[in-house]
Amino acid sequence: MTIKGTGTTGVRPIDRPHLYVQRRESWEMFRVLAKARAALGPRQVGWVQTMASHRLLVPPPEALRRPLSIPDRLLLTPGPSNLAPRVLEAGGLQMIGHMTKEMYQVMDEIKQGIQYVFQTQNPTTLAVSGSGSCALEVALFNLLEPGDSFLVGTNGMWGQRALEIGERIGARVHPMIKEPGGHYTLQEVEEGLARHKPVLLFLTHSESSTGVMQPLDGYGQLCHRHQCLLLVDSVASLGGVPIYMDQQGIDVLYSGSQKVLNGPPGTSLISFSNKAKQKIDARRTKPFSVLMDLKCLANFWGCDDKPRAYHHTTSVNGLYSLRESLALMVEQGLESSWQRHREASAYLHGRLQELGLRLFVRDPAIRLPTVTAVAVPAGYDWRDIVSYVQDHFNIEISGGLGPSSGKVLRIGLLGCNASRKNVDLVVEALKEALRHCPRNKL
Image 1 (cartoon, rainbow, N blue to C red):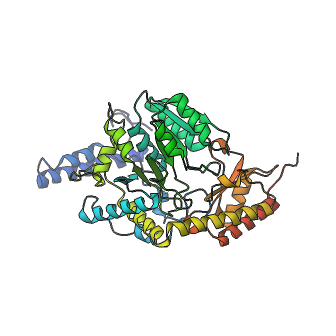
Image 2: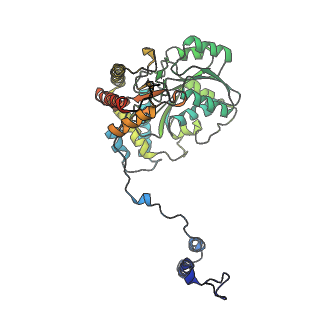
Image 3: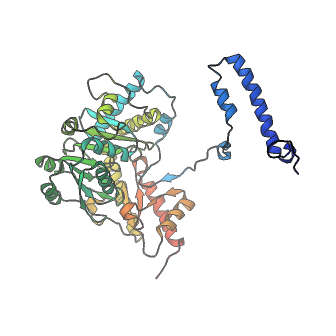
């Protein structure tokens, strides 16, 4: 029903109740504005004027009115891993300022812990606010300039990632392509070095997408004979496999917090040799990223002789957790951790083969102890197996990643999860999954 003279639309408020409510709200806001102007004065009243001109269009989400609920699962994926109780507790400590003397003390202790697990005396050793891929970008953004020759071991997901970053920087990228499950010999690397004369070689020590462990002895010295730096990804191996940064001639090494260290994701570890630092200091151009500029990061972490300057706000609670993760590794000892992972993985391999499953990496010498890849049994869909194990046993395992997608199941034994008990649990779960999941016999 319409009546003339009641506004431009000719509609009475009672015919459209929401118009009546809006006018009433506008009148109430006008009254609030008038009172605020008198009480606060003109300088403080701006926010009230803004509120009078706008209204909330997005209502509060009902999901956030409910308590957060997270399942308690056994994480036997390639990462993240379950948090150690002390690490979980450390992450819940009260916040302090990220540029206080107490926080600097925490950061200094983290640096010492990284030097221990990396087995390096490099002064330029620090943690990065971001996952392992972020640490890779810190390395490449600082080491490479447009036009630099970059040799990349591409035998899985992480070599592909390094290749892509190098291309985006504008480097001349030369991939050494291997089928998933393969690794690089010294002879193959030397041929690549002689042919392409790179300033940097990238190798993945722990190719978690396929379960391959790349040998490292001799590769650093080989690179240096060809005036090339060696960059190594140890995200899935650090703490579970022997690695000696200085003795193996590794120029840049990085890893993550969420694997063997049993810390929360979002923090990574990195160290630069003096040779790598000299290359960075001699850059003709600035790094592409301000956030990942090593000179700024190194200063913030107290790696130079200058007073620390603000660079970014770190994840304070994440650093608490990382500090405690490193403390647990110090208490356990690297050699004990390496042995425990070696024994747990050998037990897992034997149990899997008893089920008739085939290990994806055929050569036992290059099987990664922390992440085991199993060929998906013929006739099964890997997604059915992963879902069954999670739904019926509350255990997370993973399918393949990148070039191994659809080809493998991946089982992680990382840090405190590397035990015979957990091997028995996951093998029993797989046994039941193979019994109950549909199988195409064609």
